[in-house]
Image (cartoon, rainbow, N blue to C red; front, side, top):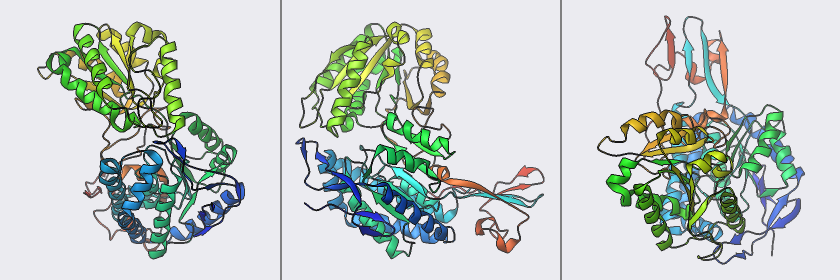
Length: 530
């Protein structure tokens, strides 16, 4: 069995490896034959040096060339879509249809093309001209970016194809991609097309690079290396915080997506109107993808009393009747089991499920847990443990005052949702609770489950810690996501011919202009891309 090569400095090469690993087929719980290297620090250094060299060239490239690279990459992914989706399905147990081929892959290529458009029209740059002082500013590329991708979205959040990659690249930065160990083969196929697209569009060697795995110590060393300008990370909280500590020690921006229980508040009037309908929606949202979404609704605030009891029983019945999906990995199965054990030890009761197995390969029974509002308030930290998978916790509040106290004890989350009566009977309680939840979440929803994340300009896929490392940025939504990988550059009295193109006076309509103490309306907005 031959060892797969790594992509460094514009070419595929044998690894100076410190060991090897294999991915697993989650449905059969058996190793996949391909062998992948664990890279040495020497390879990390080579990648850093190549990225610095590539960035020195990329800083002078026209935005059009970077846009063409992204579009070429999207075209090449589509041309190889069947092979990529088959590999991703084998490594993750996510179905080719409809999840990968009709869902995640089109989203991946769509956001690459949106990023290309943002690079072209400078919408992410926030170009600004103060005419009174002749001081101009814009966001410019920050430098080499490392992207650590998650296990649950091998394409749309993948380290060499996903949103962080597209954003960093569109902002003019070379990317060092660290593949997720759960789907190295999928990442390899995508890296092959990324490198081919770079060559086809004349991008410098080292624009895209890919390493499969490194030691934890080398990962932290990479995060703190001065040659690296920024980091995008999606994954487990513990590993992300270690990278954050290394990056913070040297003042490096790191954008993290760590964990979220995504609270859904269901009010009594809504239950009286459409109890079964909401239970059906919640079941579909919780069990979609075996619950392995960062926006999975894992904590449901539900009123005590008859309507809440009926909802609980209906939800448990639907969970029990639904098929049990396959989890992404053995570690995912262990993590879900451990989280449920933690919740039970803190006072939660199992309504249904609560045991390993029930599906093909790595699996865990569809699980509903319940806890009183009083018990939650006694142990709010522990009872917010994220059970990543096909499980959810019902928190039964006694009244609006207790519901408000529960929300105030919540950590930061990506999303929060209210279900309310259509006749207005819940409006008073909504008005009381919504301001508290608004400050705890990046995206607030009404009468809609949170699992869908549209790739559009207004989307915020972010939130207060620990949902992310910084509440002011989004990982999804263009041009907003690009701003994470830019530095603010100011130009004071620079001669016109030396200015970046977007800040020159012959480009009206592309900038904000501060004229006579007031802002003009010539602001730039991202063009819609289907």
